[in-house]
Image (cartoon, rainbow, N blue to C red; front, side, top):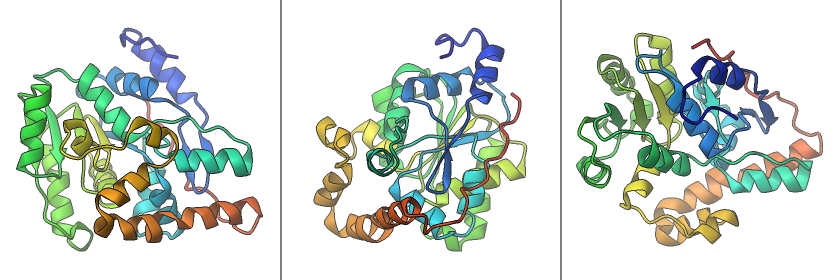
Length: 277
């Protein structure tokens, strides 16, 4: 799809801008896989204006349907929106006869760290703790990692969200990993875009850094391919993930059924035009 060495930047960006989005359950997905997504992110030159990537899963689709404040706006202005979920792909295939490209945030994060990000590359991490930063430095040899640890309860703390935005604006970096959970991460990325003055690519990637470092054990490959990664997380930590699975994610099944039966009428979040690079 693109020059994997990033030598033909103009042609690559033109091709990316021409990819038509795929409307599905309230989001406009970029039909792109891990290798292509990583190549497009890598192709953005240092100092490029801030853009951000979101990686929707079942929980995100439910949040879009419930119109969580600020979430649809954040999705509407994302530069790239990749399908994170095998459950969404299964629903698309069984109910709509469609095949969605797959680009999980965890796979994209790992691929960038292993194949694209140089040890001396300036990167920012928003979220996590000292253990996460230490594990990233140790495993990937990162010598220019800078971390900001926001407090809990970001959604009810506008000042803390603005502090995240200022941190990103004031510290130019090519890669900005925003690991504050959803919808906090997407809202921070959107606010950073609206603020202006920031550079690099923001990646709203949930717990992906914890998986990449091994701080949290990821589901076996067969479970991921079978759409059972949620079950693995639930078994590892039932108390933490029960509400997320049954209250925040499973309603996507009803959303998909209502859409298939024509009982759900609202249009997908409007996708902003991809800006010229």
